[in-house]
Image 1 (cartoon, one colour):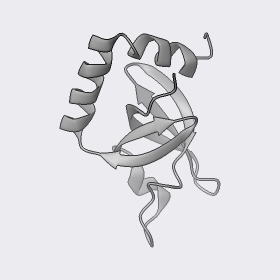
Image 2: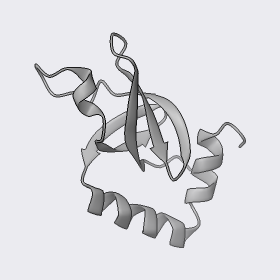
Image 3: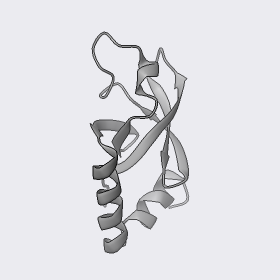
Image 4: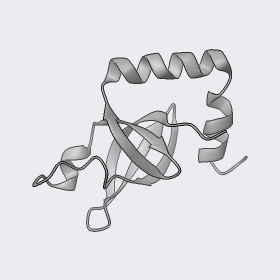
Length: 91
């Protein structure tokens, strides 16, 4: 199952291509942040955003409380480990 999983943007890796490093529960992966960049703002402003990541894209911004609640529910459902393994390329 593919889920949107919460992560925090920690660093821009390629501003021109709108790529950033996102940390999801300690697993870091490069994702495309084009969907969460605000119009007229530099890509670097995304650092620190909490986002929902799905198939290599940050699909939407969420707040930190929503991220924590979502991770908690996913952990309870046993879905986080599968998604983290997929992000780490070990699934």
